[in-house]
Structure formats: C-alpha cells, structure tokens
Length: 343
Length: 219
Image (cartoon, each protein chain N blue to C red):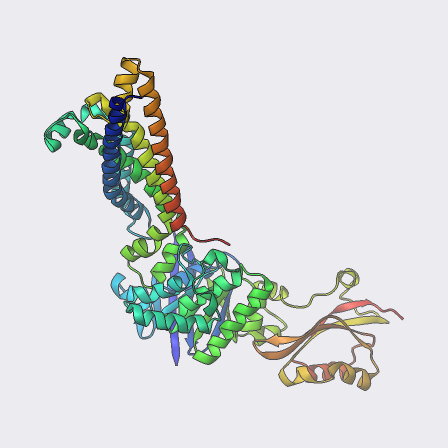
C-alpha cells in the first residue's frame, strides 16, 4: 500500500527550475533516504511534501489527498498527518518538554486531559519521561531531537519527514536518534523519509535511497544496488565515496592502471548478506596460494544487512580462474589498479 | 524637610505613577497589536502584505520622530476633545500614550522579529493557523523581550511625564521645575530626584524579575 505518491512534481524559483519531473512512491512502513548535494532541491522537495511550498505543477498524494492542490484550511488539517523533525529542533525555548510535545495536540483540539495522557505516552516512547518538566536549554542535542521526534509523532502521522535530523548532532547522539527512528519504524510501522547530505546515515538506516541531483531524481533503489554497481553516475559516486573505504595515500601514489609483472593487484570487493559472513579471505588464500592483504574497509551493517566493502591487494596475477572465483563469491569485484609488491 | 514638602512630593509621585501606568497600559494594549500586525504583514510565511506593513511602519516612525514637547502642543485640541480639558494629570495621559504607542510598537515588533523562522514553520507544519503561530509560537518565545521592552517604555514615560508638567500635568517633573528650578528650592529638587531614581529603579527591578520569570530556565 503506498502512503505517498509523488507525480511529476515541478517547481522553479524566479524561472530557474529546482525540481524537474519528480515522481516516486513510498510504501507503508518503508524507510526512504533522500540524498543529494546541497542545492540539489532536497529542501524544496521537503517543503513541498509538507505543504510549506506550493509546487508549480504535479501531485503529492498523501492519504488520498493531493497536498499540492489543497487550500489553506484543508492543508492545515492534512499537515496534522505529517510529522516533521528539524535539523535545529525548532523547539519553543520558553516552554517545557511537556508543553512542546503537547503543542500539536493543542492545535488539533485535544482536551487538556487527553493531551496529558498522550504526552506521557510519547515521552515514554522516546525515553524522556524523567525530563518532562525541563526546558530545551537544559537538554543535550540528542535529547532535544528526541523531544522533536515525540512532538512530530504526537498526532500519529502517516508519514514522518526528517530534515537533516542528525546533522547537528555528535556521532553518539546520531546513533541514538537513528536507533530510535528504527525502533519507531519497526514497532509502529511508521513510514519515514530521511533527508540528508550524509551518505553514512542513509547507508546505516535506509532500505531505499532516492538520489536528487540538480532537481532530477537520478536514482531510486536499494542502497546495496549502489554499493554493488561498478558504474554509478559521478554525483552518486562522489556521495558514495564519503562512506566507502578508500585506498591509503601511500598506495594511491604508486597506483597505476598498467598491469606489470610482479606487481600486486588492487581490487575492491563487496559481499552482501550470507556471503559477507563467509571466511572469504582465507578461502582465497587456500585455493590460489595468493596472499590477499586487506588495505582498507571491512564489515558493517548496511540497512541492517551484513555487508563487507573492502580493498585488497593480491600478490598473484589476476588469472581467469581467480577472476571467476572472485565474481562468483562476491557481489562486486573491481580492479582498481596495480601497486609495486613487497617481495 | 517640612511636612508640606513631603506632602507635595507624595502627591506628585502619585500623579506621576498614574500618568506612567495609564499611558504604559494604553501603549501595551494598542502598541502590541500594532506590532503583531506589522510583523505578520511583513512576513511572507504569515500574511505577506507589504502594502499594509510599510505604511504602518512609516506611521510608527513618523510619530516617533516628533519631539514630545511638540507633540504635546499639537495634541492640545485632541486632548481637549477626548478628556474635556487640556490641563491636569488625566489630560497628560493622552499625549503620553500617543508618544508611547509607536515607541512600544517598534520595540515589540523588533522583539517579535527576533523569533526564529524555524519556529514559525514548526507550528505551521503541526497544522497551526497564522493566529496559532502568533499566539502559541511567536509571542511566547518573544515574551522576555516584550517584557523588557515594556520596562524601557515605562521608564521613558517617567522621563516624558516631567515634560507634561509644561501643560500643568502635575507629577514629579512639574514639582521639580516649579519649586526646584523656578524657586531655587534645592531641598525639593533633591527629594524629587531621589524619588525619581527610586521609581525608575523599582520599575526596572520589577521588569527584570518578570522578564526572568518568562525566560527559559538554564542549567
């Protein structure tokens, strides 16, 4: 069941197109990452999704309603079905945690008594019950963002939009906030769209990634597709490189594309799922009496799936037999070049 | 100090307080809505109608540009029409209010402008109307500055009320001019100045306390 259906969205500022024919669907319970370099149109798309910016043309169907064509009054009602988590939290500094979380409920016309019960429930969900009477200034960045999440969830939205929700946080708080969002996604089945410029956040978190470049949607698919594809568009590659292992500088300096005898082959391999949990390196050495040395990368979780993304040097020529073995065992095998061996 | 002088000072203090508080209340009641109108008309996230914001803003500045002593004289007929007389404490409240309204309106508008646009959007995304944005978002966030601004306005009014003595408004300023300046009664002058300092200090202290109460807690 699709929660959100964006059809041919177009928007321009002063004649300059910022969104060109954007179409995509989001299914219930999905976590979708929307990434792109700054100026790609991410914020405009986000603002259009929550009805803050009216697009020139196109449809944004959320819960059988076209956000793009609603009038003020209906739009206000529809916005209650969308939760938005901001980069800079945007909490009311003069209000307590409880009052901040209660505000959307007050706007939606809940009675004081019902509000109180709901706020308690939400604060429990984000683990801030004991801080209910504190002011935002007394909280850490991660805690403030959890208040922001509780507030966004107050009206039980069908869609949660996170606008660079972790970009202002330290790595530890980022992890807590992302874990919380994952939990909410699992337990409540909530659909989440995460807008970010950080590939790392998407890699850990999103099941599906949309890449926006200069107002155009250039990729819509799984994160693993991007990792296991040898040729990505340059913009995507640049984003990917931020989160992928790179060749150490001393090897990069001596790297050449010309095969030379007695030089080591430098390869990148990506293993996903079950194959990521095999004794790949020792098998390689055993079968071909080739020494494979790990120079960069390792194992991690990519959208919850075990993934190995690494760069190896092999002290044996890349015979057909080795090549075949590597392509059978891995999801991606790329030759990066050759470096002098240390024999 | 003679009993007569003490009574004079007490009576003058009362008159000053009446003028300052009445004009202060009127400037709050008229100036704040004026500030809200200018603010919400000038923000494109809210009403975005510069043709309302600009003329109003211009009017506020024009009124602020007129020196108070001149305003006092220009407004004599208006005062007579509203109060029935152009003399006395009650009469002085009219020009004082007319001067204080644009003064506070501008201070309040600056305070409202200081609220982060992100907060306006946050309330809008919750489904809040423009009115809710202002009532639940902008005014509560600007409250400490709005209170500090009112304190400044009240203190400025205390000074201005002395000038109103020129039209027989009474009050501390009037007393200081008549006894202290014109009759060389240093005792009265000193007494008046001490009372004024105490009064201003008191207003500032109450203002600071209220602003602190409205401000977010730290630590």
